[in-house]
Length: 224
Image (cartoon, rainbow, N blue to C red):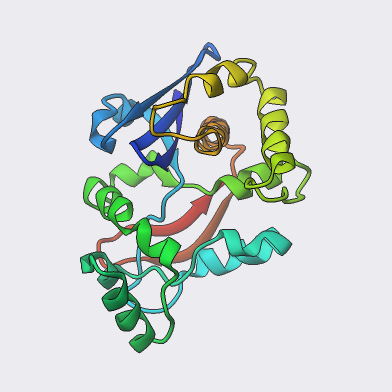
């Protein structure tokens, strides 16, 4: 089965694919429904799927514990009612009234969360699953989280892990991103999610499962 890893980027979405012959490629699309091959693939995306009406998702809290020093890389406090807000001050005020404020960075991805939420159904979630690149990199790095991707050494560590996992063209791909609306770290995150999606087809991926579903019946779980 084709494996696809997806990460959000300024231009929309960057998707890395790995087929059964281990041929690898990437593409950038403005909307998730432009990926026509999604229904015939195992897809792992770096975006929350399944949102509570209030409070934190259990899978997020567990992921933070698992990442140790890298815990801030997992957003918490994303709730379904926040999808209706287009103004940060109003969204944060609602979130505070619900018990916990909303980080500006988390607010900025609400449109992408809403796009994925509208695209998904409980049935489609069988092969379209939430992932988190930092958890996948940690697994591939001997259960040790990597230093920040915003540091040169952190980017190099991610590149080296991807090359060790068969992404021999990752440097060539990175060179093609100029002017594309995607950054190198977006490519790396999509690439490592593709590896986890490939591992899921062979039952090697792991899952943090809160055991809960949201109001739409979507499971709240993070695969890595």
